[in-house]
Amino acid sequence: MRKPAWVLPTARDPAGGHAVRRLMRELGLATVCESARCPNISECLGAGTATFLILGDRCTRRCGFCAVATGAPAPAGPGEPAAVSAAVARLGLDYAVVTSVTRDDLADGGAAYFAATIRAVRSAVPRARVEVLVPDFAGAPGALETVLAAAPDVLAHNVETVPRLYPRVRPGADYGRSLALLRRSREIAVAVPTKSGLMVGLGEEPAEIVAVMRDLADAGVEVLTVGQYLQPRATSLPVERYLAPTEFAALADAGRAAGIARVAAAPLVRSSYRARELHRA
Image (cartoon, rainbow, N blue to C red; front, side):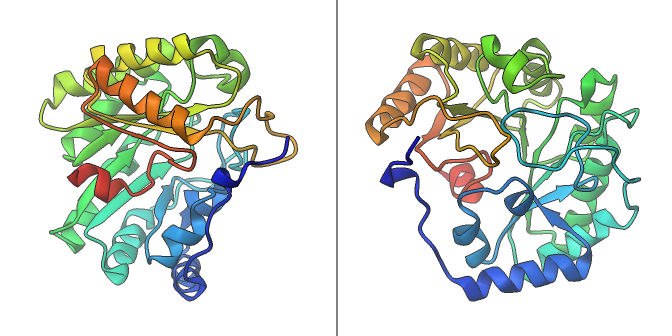
């Protein structure tokens, strides 16, 4: 299916992007921008920022939409939190977004590494806000509590798609478990905003999207991102449909009508895209 013009990214400052890549290599860090083949990579790296990918660069799940490498992961590096904090300091960031691969091989799903990274960034750059985009930790007891004890400024977890498509799009995940994590986060830390993300164009129906928005609002989610799914690899799930920009505007209205305070919906919106601006909106 030919891509319409509105999903084609605009190239930005290549020099800035090269500098960020060099710094990541120097510090032994990965970014989800590169690993997931994000369409906004030129814009974000060119602007001197990136979304940090911790717990290695190999995921223990095989989601049909994702380009992140899968397989047996290496042990998580103990120096990773310090390396992320060094990168935040050297890039001069006042808003850092940290996510991870899914690590079902770890008893806590990697929660302790998220907590250590939050604390390391706060220690190195006290003024920096930290948004974490966490996996579901396979429902590990105490994992979410461990992350929230480190006091992130935003707790994000993406439901990604509608429940009917989970077996094809997110095998190994569970829609109810994801909702429960978001709801539980609000119960534990009411002052920490929760955020989630949806992809569209995978075969979902409009009524299903609205139903998910209502579920997220009922779970206390305050921020939602909605973007067009783009097939990152030949082996990834195909795009079923490209939604027009006017349809994304209607989805933003539907999300707000469902009770979600802040909704960013556009073809190239991603969960951590312009996260600083969305948090401050």
